[in-house]
Image (cartoon, one colour):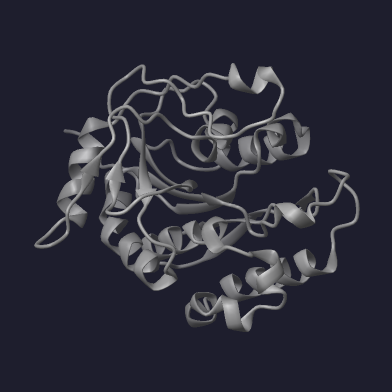
Length: 262
């Protein structure tokens, strides 16, 4: 008799720029995090670094090169590899769950994982032996992304780990020069507010974060890195018993806060 897949949590993680992978504290935090989660049958990632509408499915074949979607870094960051298997069966399930009349789904078979996906996954699943599928973020509207997450939620019962990958505060113009110096007040205040709103399951406040959160306009001049939270949150709403803050702290003044929804 086939074993019943484990119901998986959903994750929102702060993925950082490629150099964050050199931070031993962050890499340990991610390794410890994944070590406490049941092994997924596959991983579905929505990254802040791929906005495309309608919803678009990335590469499903094995061996598609990574997408090095950053500029100006030392050459070694462009030599990173992460040869996770493709996930064509998961792509078919996504199509079943999210398409309907007037709801097309596009395919981008040559688009490999971007750094919002492979940078954290390389730390969480370093053997690259779990199939991974990345799909685009089709909107920045929190309400629509929450709805998308809810439509993807059945995947949790099929052993799929759904990850929204962004950054809890993200303002490159206001980055602190030192990676571990004192975090600016705007980042601390926004991070604290988000942590409390998630702990209180205050979905309405989170959806209206632009008006309700302190320093929201500074913490997110554009909400692309906060938007993936709503996919993870939406997928975790049904049967949602608890939320955990799994990673905290700051890197160059930006909040690494990450969450697990169960």
